[in-house]
Length: 120
Image 1: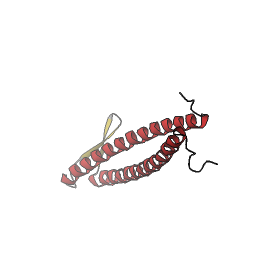
Image 2 (image 1 turned 45 degrees about the vertical axis):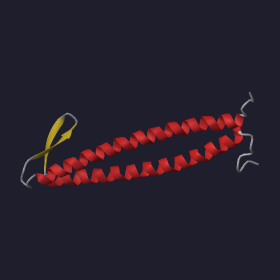
Image 3 (image 1 turned 30 degrees about the vertical axis):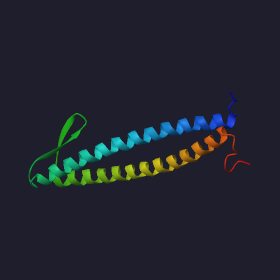
Image 4 (image 1 turned 90 degrees about the vertical axis):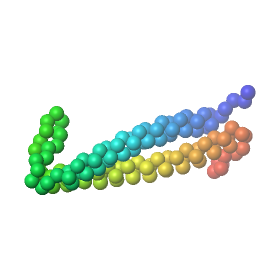
């Protein structure tokens, strides 16, 4: 069995690290998506309330009285921040995926004995 070159070993380790990063990004995106769904549900419930109806929000272990308008504003702002975060994570996932595809191709070329593209 042929010995794998140090460059190929380094690229393989890099691919493993990139795969872990991609998994972490996916988990973070999923978590934010769940938070967004919860906020959307809360906003739907707030729309059912009258303007003068008492509403509360949870802050740690405490319920705090608030106004419908203020809660809607806070939740909408939080939803927008989450949407931007999800978008940024998705863009990062795409870039990382493209880099991984390129590195996988380079590694396959190295292991098949071909000169990788861009090697000189």
